[in-house]
Amino acid sequence: MVMVKLLLTPENQLQRLNHLLHAVETLKEKDTTTLNHRPNENAWNVLEVLEHLSIAYAMYDKKIETALNQLHTSNEEPWAFRPRFWNRFVIEGQRPKGNKRPFKMKTLKKFEPQLEKELTPAAVENVFENFQKSYSKLKASILVSRNKEMNHKRITSAIGPIVKFHLPEAFEFLICHAERHKIQIDEILSSHKG
Image 1 (cartoon, rainbow, N blue to C red):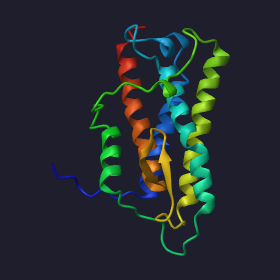
Image 2: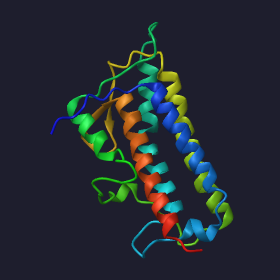
Image 3: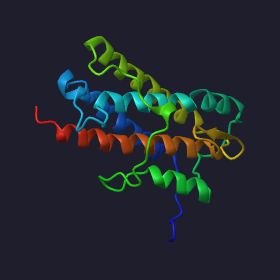
Image 4: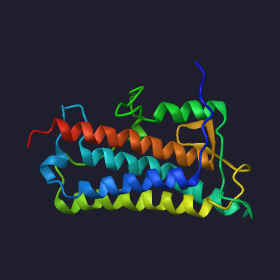
């Protein structure tokens, strides 16, 4: 299998992240019954998916912030970054293929949402606020990174030291992960008959 050389840019990442943030914002228009709907008893509902994404981002938050503070400013154009083979493989494992989620995988316990079965309106709002806060912070980090020298600092992934990302790779992984779960949300909503 030949993998095409992937080129990461902040502009592409920001555009996709803006799309995700907008899509989640429109979910606030759904009623609580729809947001709490599970396609089956073992499946997550929309709110649990959003909570999972907030938990996943939290595993990177401080690492990204620390790394950004350690990077030097560049006087060049915004970065363009080609991921290394193993990291490209990990990223592509998360990236949706059209409207499909390849390689469905079991979520590690530390990433599982721990929400009540039925949430109050205030708890629902809190889930949305956590997501918006997390992914708006990711957006701000990408903006800050645009004129940084990105080749000199790596962070350990949330799954452990087997994967170490340069910041553009970490950004891409988090965005692909969120895009993957956006497809899951669409599947949950289409299964709801209410």
